[in-house]
Length: 514
Ligand code: PEP
Ligand code: MG
Image (tube, rainbow, N blue to C red):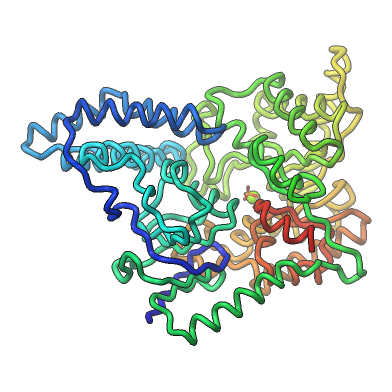
């Protein structure tokens, strides 16, 4: 037995067998020419794009465009002329083009480096005559062990067989990790995978960031009893200090996310992250386009509350069509509400669409990354201006929608008593609150040990926020990932939060059916 630790992981416990997709016997085949491999990969990506929903559809469509971009073929040809074999020429082209993306001074385009590597990897697999699906031979309790995983991998995986991901590279906020979290799959990142062989029995404790290879019977027994305890903690009904149950709500990033969390038992949508809707579009969505989406979201909620968070762009999220300014410290820059207040041409269509969707749905609005009461006042004033304009235009809209704020900055915690006088509710974004309180970038593995929402400083900030909210008679939700951890949930309940909003339908189901 051998234990390996990491500070970058996604919680959850699992037991399974190491499976290396790239070393699977299914992966070995003959050799294809460039034209054959190109045609086969084009067919595969086209099929994936056709069958995928929403965000994944956009990803595969973008991959298809990258594949067909003559620059890729020209780069591969140039390396072939240097004397490289076809697989090596594709690898070299991947490195060269990914490096070009990396140099771009735009977070969004930099992230496209992963996409070009994903496309080239697909091509290389085709050249080697590998099966189009390297996950085809997966055992039924597979722990996927790999250098890294890409979105296209998850489209081809049979998740009923996957117990965990163990990866050398990747960050907690990567696409693959977001998908893993929504499926309740633990992930360990930054692992030296050379220490693992195909078929090794593995134990994964995501919360502890611990991997055990070839566990002894004693280790296995101790692990299984911790697993049971964690499951019963998960199922514990959460009760606040007043004896009232904590409400369970769901997080969503798209329309597709809404039915699973509601069917699992969520009492409403505590956070609809609208930036993903903007990211799926290649232009700024008009108020009519947004209205159609928010109306459909409200219809899916069927009378349950829908909390629409206004655009949280900036930081690590960019939109190609908005030409965001280049900043030295984007997380401390013109992000979220700050950006929207500066850009009414972006903000007003969204406020109008939310007010119009509020005419016939239980819609609330939530402003992200507030730092002062003045910002909240400004946003609310603009909301009223939008309502008056809609009325003047004769368009049906809500008289008002409850306007709440996210508590994500230390300033908002310190100003919570004043903010609570003007906000209809608070929702604590512990992902950001933790990074700003601990001064530890949420995406930087080197400071992941500091990025801990259970740190005393963060817990005190949450306690102060709850006290200020309750003194003013408004409710507090937690919509950050912290609430997905059983031990954290018990602390949050004890601190008096009124609701938690979770991404995982599985956890919501466990909590609401206990
Ligand atoms: C948070 O910061 O906790 C949050 C829910 O918002 P996001 O993760 O989208 O920044
Ligand atoms: Mg946030």
